[in-house]
Image 1 (spheres, rainbow, N blue to C red):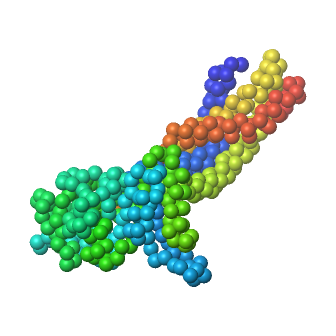
Image 2: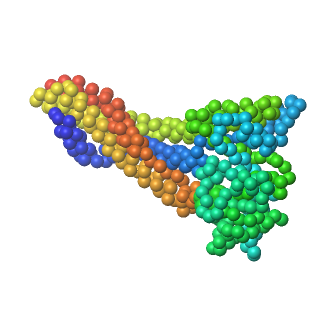
Image 3: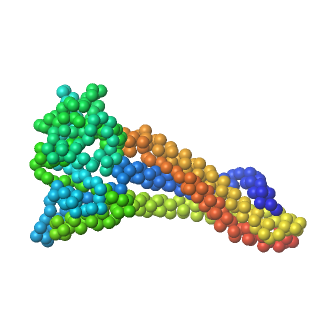
Length: 417
């Protein structure tokens, strides 16, 4: 019997017992649809995380300080935060980096909300102090004007670059270039407007005011504290070496004081990826149990089918069918049952995932994921893998019934009542 003939015979048997076939496929359908929903959500979350990090900038090294108070108590010297001297030391001593920008929002700056005012319009904002390289390192683009310059930084210039949301709220269609806005008690000249970036992590990336870091430090906070430093290595292959060079520089300056953090985007992304993978394995285990139950159901039904078709098997052997023909026939039938169930499960899972994304988009606030709801991404490998695995389940759990059918004695089978 040819493979095509075996497949058509299997489909005829499925149609002849529709209810039983559907009940047999139910476990496989549930398991495969659960796998598809799980993969869609996990891969959607992974895709969203990657996009967020791409928005942050490319191949960035992130330097921060988070004091370990328990260890600090045991040391004679403690550190309050990163300072501009650290930034200058990294610039001078670390030759593996090609760009660096400190960022700071202290009291009256990014640490606290301030009222930005223009005429009778106002907007709450946390102004951030940055350096000239910030524009390139953070993948920011200008819509108008210019960015902060080295001269602005040296002179503590009262200039600023505003995001598109601030532009709309304060200027409402007017050209903001060359106009002054009041932030607290400080009057700032608008020299540039940023291109819109949208929301990120539930926050409006366009509701921002950037000023020279020295302006925020000296005119608002009264200190040289730095919140975080962004650096870029000269070459992508130098990320680890540049991180080590920065770490050694900070340790020399601060006598191995604890609390300094030097990390890269890739390391953070890998850590998040591991968490998502563990989450996916847990969900995959639950879906695997459903597939296991479905496979056992297939084995049970195929054993019943062998009993019901004993005379048919005996007749086929009597007219010349070999053991391998009977074996292949029953394996194809079980694989067909689970394969069709897998296709239905893929469609059901994809529909469920997209329905969840649509519903979440309607009910979730616009501040979450840019108002796009639960992120969904179903890669082709997941679809093909789910179908192949469902067919494999049929083959695996159909082996015993198929072997049993192939071993039937034709004379005993013909006499079976």
